[in-house]
Image (cartoon, rainbow, N blue to C red; front, side, top):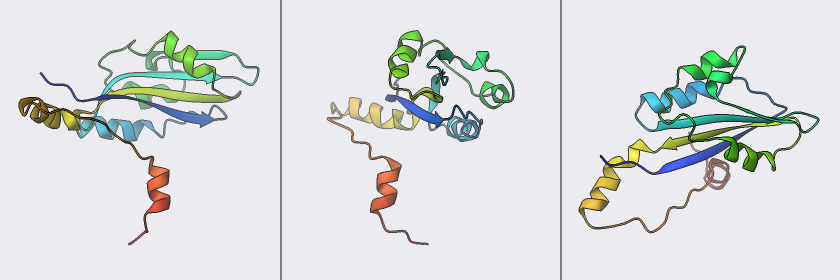
Amino acid sequence: MAFGPVEVAIIGFPGNKFTGKVAPAIADLVQSGTVRILDLLFVSKDVDGTIASFAVADLDGDLQPDYVGIEIHEPGALGAEDADEIADDLDPNSSVLLIAWENTWAVRLVTALREADAFLIDRIRIPAEIVDAALPHTV
């Protein structure tokens, strides 16, 4: 079985404002077959600089239902080492959501490259904000 490339995205939440509004977009990507979620890890730093990390199962309050419905295929793939690494760069009173996903949309391409004895030399990702600023907006 071929796998697509795996990415880890780091989504910041200033003011520790996890609202759950990101979860439906993640769920849509999973349901459409675009990505497969390997793991999710939340990391937060309070105003005093105390770090906490937690998995979806550890969420409390209103957030848990938003994220519990997302199937995680490799729970624990993101762990304490990842939390420690990202925590150093977190501002006080802020949080991040680390998401490891497989780009399942690319499996067909990966298979075709392998069968053609070809390989991907490089990938360049241009952030959406830069594309939005650079391209003309048409309706």
